[in-house]
Image 1 (cartoon, rainbow, N blue to C red):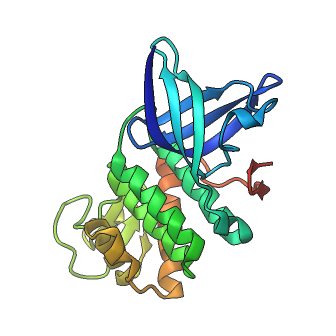
Image 2: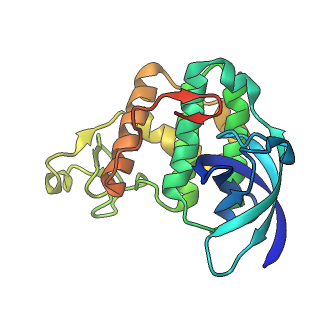
Length: 250
């Protein structure tokens, strides 16, 4: 076994036996990994964190070679994003954020861009009044960083530039031009502003995209398109009707 230290966002937790806890983390240096915190439920003072979902911690863990469950020997809280916990809607957005990371990322596949994006978005969820926009930005950036984004620069079928109004195809994962739209009778018309917003967010840094204006119609369509795209290609529902509390899923 080798020992490592890294920053980690808690994605989910589950009880293990009578005294311990298994936590799924997204880490700066190792990507997504699972860790066992022995005895934390019996002697919580052994760790300087309560390991709340979406909290940022610094962990020390023993990396095992024959199992994907590693032993966490130390977990120190760096930021519990306390202001998120004062508002149920912000809590829901934070839970959506960590669930998307859990769904879209592979085990122990490092991507520091994803880690930094998650930390930045959690910080914005504490204070930014437009929390819907923050989660939309997160979805678009995450898809881009995962290499799993919709094809919007041109027609996904013929690759020609789209001049007129385009339609979005879940089946093909992108826009269809007038000539190719018949290939998917379920394709739907989308606002030009929806497409322009996605492309702008993909191509610009986080600070710049925070200043991007979005009206309610664009936000609504962005959420519909992005969630439908993910659910179609992942073949699973993104969000379950869950009760949440500050420390985790009930």
